Image (cartoon, rainbow, N blue to C red):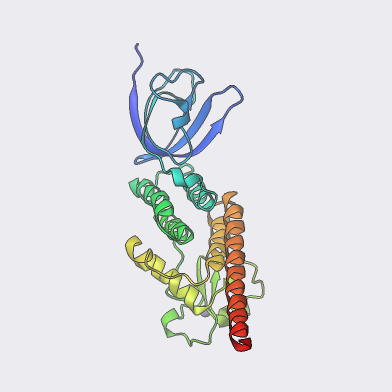
Length: 280
Ligand SMILES: [Zn+2]
């Protein structure tokens, strides 16, 4: 029987280069996750370099008997997002890809996952706040996987968040997957599974989960460090420990540090200018 070639479109979320020169790629396609191998020197149409992380590609492949992986024979590029290799952006893209990879272990979560990943990666390269885009799409992907946190009321006693006194501190009970009121948090001595949140962060989280992506992109997130801390705890417990989150957190803290220094410098310059004016 002759080879039966098939075609497939998808976004590459993982690329493993083997010592043999072969490349194994994992893709998210509209109909789920897919893995294939490109043998060194065997790609007839196109360059093996097109099989890079974040690339949106069209593949031709076939299934060879007694082989676990599909054999890729041709690659054409639908789109590359070159900015994604920028060190100020890369960690966010890597995080979304790794999250997709872990969320789709053994399950197909629908075409929406592919759409969110594509929009998320494009958003990260185009939006002035890639960190915010990363947060927004990470939650969209988690929700699509049925892992959205419950944010309208305390998961323990049912007290509504909208009824709470502004002075009361709610927290996110990561293990229970939702908000926890102050009195329930007091009863529970072990607070290792919860993250204390201020009202603005809770309201931002609620907005992320109730608004459209477009509206979400207009949101102001006050404390990006906090948002990533929440995502880290939440994904570690509900999905898997994601390697990429460390790079995201390092980038966020170095950006916060740089912003603080710039602010201090502006203040210093202003003071110096005032002094010069006074001495004149
Ligand atoms: Zn409660």
